[in-house]
Length: 388
Ligand SMILES: [Zn+2]
Image (cartoon, rainbow, N blue to C red):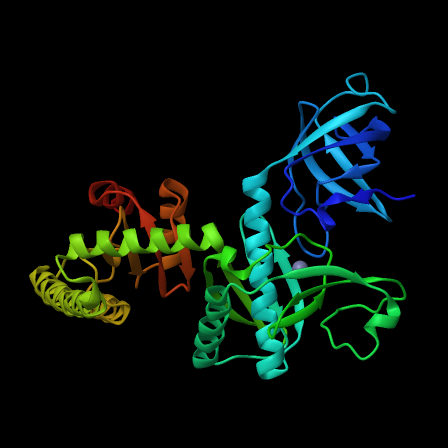
């Protein structure tokens, strides 16, 4: 006989007493314990298991094998005896959060199905993330409608009814299910919203969900994957977002409803300053080129950030006038330089090789020209080049 699943009918019970049917050592330490009955919901249907305590020992995970619920408990086989009673306490905050998020998923999937005929193709509920997959792609407006309607179901505080239906009662009854059954089926019914075959604990009334928030929607396997947060998790998320917006408003000295305009303005200013800086660096580079006396062997210049084309043109110009090392090192905005080097009377790859050997430079090219990136100071780089 399998484990009696107390969570089926008593999803709000937090403590129970069961008799230990079997106890054995687990491979990774701790024990595997079977009870005659349990309130611990096992990992099933994409939802992580309950956690809590069993007779003072931590219940780390709960799984289901056939019709038997197996508790992974942080104890040794000598701590608890088969045949003895064990007292279980589930982590209620964790359980209730799962009930809120799970029931929220039913409302969303029910509406997706009734409104657009979209099927639920996957569900994942862990401590960190809740996702539901649906077979149809939705537009931004449709996602807004889905979220708004789902929250209306929350406001209506509808009853959520969970019970087993024998096969004869199921005839003619339409319900969502990923598999077919030949025995009694546990249906979860939210009147006018959803009827779905499901084994997990749910809240008794939709008002307990508090809020349903879709925080991300991406295309997935021809449909969509929605990341959702319900109940306290949804509240914490929105509260965090609100704090962040208030903080940004303070930093930018702008009202929250004008933050997008402020950010666009700052990005525009940044872009225009970058253009000015590059133009100034190009003009300085041109002046530096003109200042190198003809007759010099090498022409090595260091400059601020410039476009790659400007840098390349400068090196080409230098290599028409000088036969030694012709190089432009442009600041990469950090602690290094983007370099382009030509060596009309030699092989530019030798120069890049020396920079790689001494300073770990990256890059490559041809005999005529090499380009890459190097970290190091101007003096250090010059010493290496002049030693060639
Ligand atoms: Zn369910």
